[in-house]
Image (tube, rainbow, N blue to C red; front, side, top):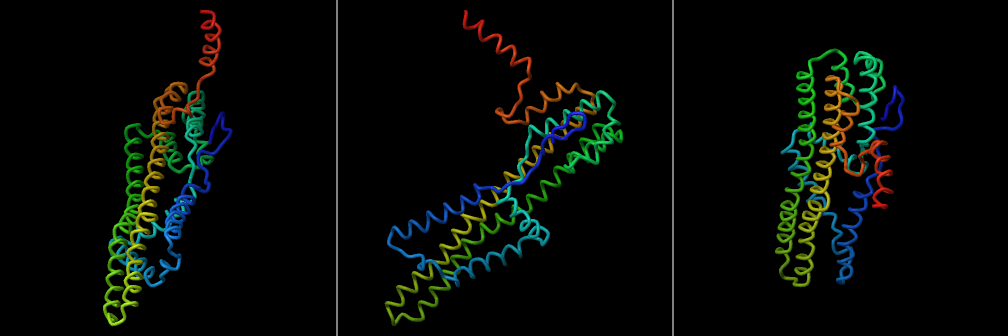
Length: 286
């Protein structure tokens, strides 16, 4: 949300579909099923409702025993962010901080009180509110660092739910395979049925390994990336608010905050561009 004198140009946070997540699942499923068909198999060979019930039900039960209900709820809510990404415009975040810094430098930090109701990001709003209230900078940083740490811990608890599921499902798949083999052993008199039964029994193992490595573990890693990005923008906001409290020049604040940006997203100031343009003809003559 870039601001200059209180005007809003763009949003720091926006939500869009994560086509990598959708596409990844399609490519993974397509590759496995395609390989099966090319090898002479059929989709019906691995379409076993019983195996799916054993693997998914057993995994869910194990995760419920392992994780507290609050973590399970958080994990279920977090699944949405895997497929719908919250895009964070770090450049817009820097612009927003610079807008507040310029206003604070011109009219004092108290003047930012009228901006608080317009701030959408709750973390930035809280940090800037503490700054306007005259909170000591050291104490302000300590309070906001605690908030970052606790939020990260809550998110990590949700990630552990998916990591646990990724660890349990292959084992539950083996349990399903063994259960299938037990049923096969009851009909050893019919050798044709034995071969077919063994093939069906191992479908549970396929389900267990597949759901772990194609869904649960990738979801956990995607959520880790989301958390890392969220922590990064919070640290940017905290560093920016701290610089405002210190009364730092907005140009110096921008230079400091550009460390949070990707190299391609950093803005080059106009004088630098002009110097580069002027230097080009001189270099050509030389």
